[in-house]
Length: 348
Ligand SMILES: Cc1cc2nc3c(=O)[nH]c(=O)nc-3n(C[C@H](O)[C@H](O)[C@H](O)COP(=O)(O)OP(=O)(O)OC[C@H]3O[C@@H](n4cnc5c(N)ncnc54)[C@H](O)[C@@H]3O)c2cc1C
Image (cartoon, rainbow, N blue to C red; front, side, top):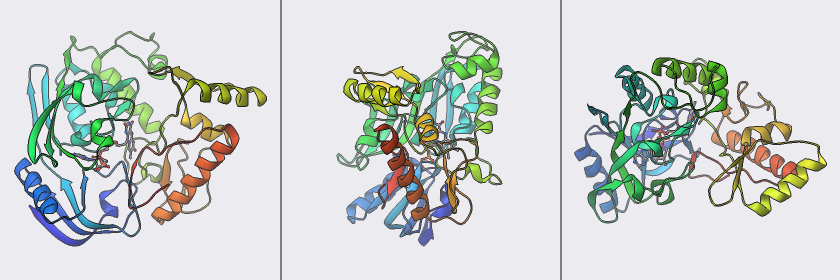
């Protein structure tokens, strides 16, 4: 276990933002993870668990407690069953499953961060989300002080949500298990219109696994959604806002607002009679185009949903841009955007 006092956190995040941690512990085995959690909990010390820091907005004041960085390794494939240690680099694990000819997570290629964080917000992209393939999550339960194995059905997965995100003080994910598919070198049925269109196929069709993987990586790179240290458009936390889920009443009010402005917004059916609309569309139509902003934090020049650090931003700079956009969208369309990244010591 590696311990540093007063450790800078900004270099551990993809936004490169945030003040120092009182103590930074890097754990390389499950036993080290559990020992570090127990030590912090036993001392009543605030604890922040981090993986790749790609979904975190840490305040400029930093974190007055222990930050536990999970750096465990383990990629185990038995037939179509995959088990990943929480610290495995997600994008590398996806590439290895494609190499092994297995479908199920290929559309989640290029997403930064660790395997252990994927169940936390039910990571998803291009028509796939981890909830579709996760069978079990092995976690340390801080309340019961024991290691538990949670079947997927007990993980309360929904759009960018899970029981881990809903109860952030309780579980530390140690291992994630997936059931993949051996589909004779083909990908999962394509669900996402943009992918189908790019490949010149219809939704529901399959293409060779590697073609699907490379297509997604190219689409993502074009939007600044693959990490590249030289490209400030990727100094982000990915999508800063989730796509809003509107109740029937909220959707009706939204429709009236659109009709007044002679606009039509993207809309998809969502569970419980809700309708999902596009945060990127709302931001753009509210007047915040790609590259918006003149300060050290701006929208990405490739995607309106990514708020980026152009090199010298502070967390406060980023948050004031986020507030301006959230409030501008609300004023224009009556829809309130909700942040996707986890806020540490700050609020929007
Ligand atoms: C360029 C870019 C593109 C992105 N694209 C997508 C996308 O397409 N789809 C998508 O869903 N997300 C996307 N993201 C967001 C992010 O990559 C994912 O949410 C990722 O899973 C976060 O992993 P991480 O290890 O970096 O988590 P961190 O940022 O380190 O942590 C995020 C949260 O998870 C918790 N956490 C981390 N590890 C554990 C653990 N082992 N146990 C318990 N809690 C833990 C942390 O406490 C924190 O609350 C993108 C981000 C970037 C920068």
